[in-house]
Every structure is written in structure tokens, then in C-alpha cells.
Image 1 (cartoon, rainbow, N blue to C red):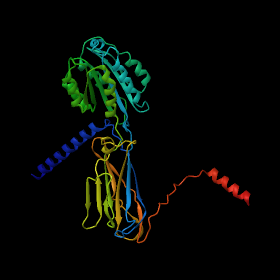
Image 2: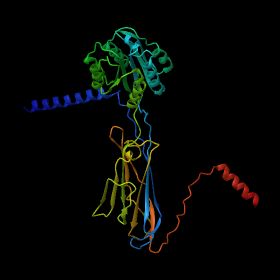
Image 3: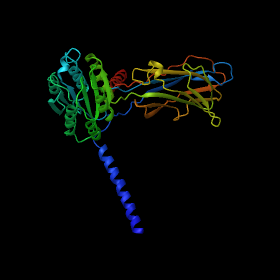
Image 4: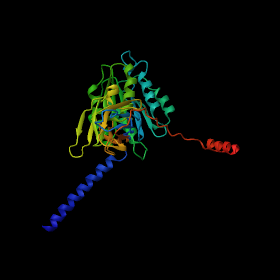
Length: 398
């Protein structure tokens, strides 16, 4: 019995190892185009920096200002992209309700213009009832544009044949490292489709973004291939909508480095008291009964500027409040560092990191009269040639 037990345990261990190996192998090579989120820039000041102790009756208030500026780009990829443009070339595309002006081709080429030929590749499949032609993955985007322009409009509609050829092109991908492998599948009709083909794409780790043009499209099939592979389906009422849809797909494929859901967690020292007169009402204020510190929280400050949870580089939010101090001293720190922070997420709502709120200092006395602040002049880097020139001038004066 002991030997059998050992054998059973060994069998279970080997089974678990096998499962882990399978999962690991399936994850290698195909990844999401995620990126490191850029840190917001945070500044902090206290003005005036010299005040009287709380209760003195005059010059006892300082105004604390926290300024948060967004960062990042909406179209950054940290891994290469391999994209197949699967373009419907059936006869209906030439009709007035289809795409007689070939706007679908212009949209695909505009997408191509956003890609980076030093690390990305793309291919094209022109399909209808059969495959008209296909071009393997390449970084020669100028050539690929000429092949996209060769897509015509004749024949019937067979979604399955177009999707199968797209999968074949990705299967033949010679890239050895990680990449985001994507199929952008466009159709305006209804035809043969197999769920198993989408399953094959999902198993290989490919993501399908499907587009249904017009009102006669096979919505069910296009939605199935997108949802099965973790992509998205986009309805396009007319060809005029295609450019915006392709741009939106690029935004989905390219990872945004813009911080989202930016929260400011300000924590003041125990001797900083009577915090109030907020320009933006905090979501919460909590005074710790043990330490005496005060935690002031503003949530999702990006919505203050444009009603959107992201904070791009052109967005700045300023938060101010007044406070007093009940302790005398020189250069007293206002914040509890490093606990005072700005937290932020990625575009999917996942925790992306935090950046510390810089320290501000105040000097507190008993009979300090109100006075204008003496500005702190910025440090300026002086070129070495200027320093040499000054030395020469002084030496000549001697």
C-alpha cells in the first residue's frame, strides 16, 4: 500500500507539472500589447512659508497647493504587433450601399501608417467566395499598401475561407520573440462561417477585431469570432464610419501609457491643524486618533478637468487648502512622507503604481508679521564656455 501511495502521489505531481508546462507553452510568444504607465508629475507648495502659531490671531494660515499633471501617450506599444488585414472583396462592396469608393482600403492604410516598421509587421488577405490573394507578414509597408490597393470587389462571401487564410499567415509568422498577433476582419455580407475556426484562432493566441459594414452583414458570425478570441465587434452603418473604427481598433491594440483613475492621498503632520477652505471638496477627510495625522483624499481627479478618468499630458489639476500649525519650529515638514502619494491605474483599471507627493516646509513663530514671499530663483545650468569666459574677464581686470 505504501508503494501504491507513493506511485499515486508521483502520478499527481507529474500531472500537475504537465499542466503547468502546457499553460506555459501556450502563453509564450503571444502577449498583450501592454505598456508601462507614465507617472503623473506632482508639485507641492505652501504659501506663505512663515506663519504664526495657531491661536495667535494673525498671519497663522498657510495655503497648501498640490498640482498634478498627467502624462503618457494613447498610442504606445511595448511589444511588436503582427496584424493581418482580412478585407472583404465580394461584389457587393462595389454597390452604393457597400464601399464603392474603397474607403475600407484607405482606413487599412491609415492604420498601417501608425505602425512601426522597425518592429511591427502586417499582412493582407483579399477574400470573397475564395481567396483572391494574400500577402505574408512584412515590414515593407510601402509595398503592402500597393497590395491593399489591389483589393477589388467581385465574387461571393465566405467568411470562413478569409478567416482561415488569416490564421495561416499568422501561423507562418517567423518572429521568435513576443508579439501581439491580431486579425482585423472586415465584411459587408453573410456567408459560410464556422465557430471552430475562431476557436483555432483563440487557441493560437490570436485576437480578432471584426467589422460589419452595412445592414446585410452576418453580425452573429462576426461577433462570435471577436468574442471567442477576446477581441471586439464594430458595426459600421456606412463606409464613412470605417476610418474612425480602424483608429479605434488601433487605440485598443496599442497600449495607452496615460494614467487613469488618479487619486491624491494627502497626509499632513499631527501639528498641521484646521485644514479647510478646499478649492475642491475632498472625497474623505480622516484624522487618526492615535498619530494625530490627517488623511485627505481626492478620488479620480482626472474627471475634474474633462469628465474623463484619464489624465493625459495636457491635463493639470490644482488642489488647494488652508491650514494652521500648532507647533513652533523652522522648516517644519507639512506632509507625512513617503505616505502622501498619488495613485493611478492603467486604462483597464489595474493598479499601475504611485508617485510620492513632494514635501513642503513652513517656519512657525509667535510674532511673525505678514510679508511678501521671497521667490526662490530656479537653478540654471551655466555652460562651461560661459564660466571660462567669466574667468577670462576677471583675470583681465586684475
